[in-house]
Amino acid sequence: MLGWTAGIFCLVIAAMVTFYSYNLLSLVLERQAQLGNRQLRFRDMARDILGPKWGRYFVGPIQFGVCYGAVVACALLGGQCMKAIYVLSNPNGTMKLYEFVTIFGCFMLILAQIPSFHSLRHINLVSLVLCLLYSACAAGGSIYIGNSSKGPEKNYSLKGDTENRLFGVFNALSIIATTYGNGIIPEIQATLAPPVKGKMFKALSVCYTVVCVTFFSVAISGYWAFGNESEGLILSNFVDNGKPLLPKWFIYMTNGFTIVQLSAVGV
Image (cartoon, rainbow, N blue to C red; front, top):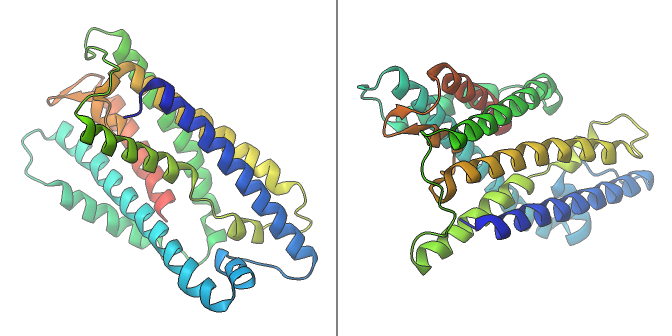
């Protein structure tokens, strides 16, 4: 969608800008807590900065839109992974994508009944491990296919006419923005035991180390292996016209990791 130069540049810039912004936001929250004005949510911050009406009617809809988009995206990706497993195991099956999206959405609805954010700590730990495993599998699979004769011919040119390229650029930027731009700093910082000084910076450093390692490895290896034929979900490239380019068990395992990880992210 963006090519090598623009793609890597946008990934790096987005990581730097959001890391700085989140760290600055954490320092502001810490300072406000020291002054006796503890803010637990973005809406609390907006209320103090913009006033009660703007905080409710401006920040609230934006937060709802971001959360709604993230949940819908996770449900769609989870449904795609479930369908990929189904198609490999039953090539003549008649189930449609929307059925798998519905099943995955119901699963997320059950997980959403967990009473508090702190109760998700075990799920988040599992999500972290699965994220690393999924990324390793996706990057390893891409490298294997790229080095084998099964892989497609590599073409790194931007395909399509001007209009399609423009839409592709906006699509790529939206994916990058969604990847980095959904932090819940106030909610996380509110769960830390005092004193919180320095803790959030360490947490952000660990978080961005994981994010950069996983995101960059999958993005670079996937684009190197499949070029401009890369799909938004790189696992879709592991099957070509119904023929798996990797062992079936490997594709099952990678999709399974992704499904569980997406369920934690969506919740």
